[in-house]
Length: 106
Ligand code: SF4
Image 1 (spheres, rainbow, N blue to C red):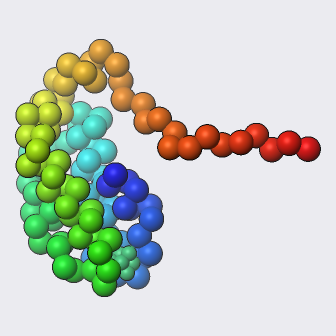
Image 2: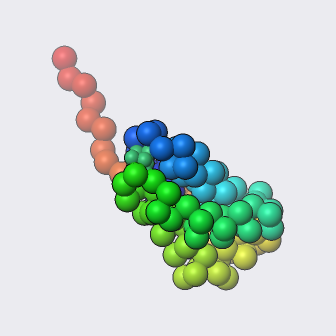
């Protein structure tokens, strides 16, 4: 979801353009088991401080996703921080395509 906000923001506000990219980068590092305690602290700070800093609700939406991740899934976040997630160890993460791409027919 954070990658979505990073990809889809309009790039008109520096706080949103850079903030969504930074939050998505930390989420990706967590997913890949390479995030640090400092990364997590930055994500926690951004999830609060970036609210209300964009011209529309996009940045707030991204900050809400980050805050929800930290508040609702603290154990999973810690497992990924420690790189000992049992689910990831048994089946590496692979995002499903959100839609089917139709083959071009000639
Ligand atoms: S906060 Fe809204 S207007 Fe500003 S860059 Fe993000 S999407 Fe665009």
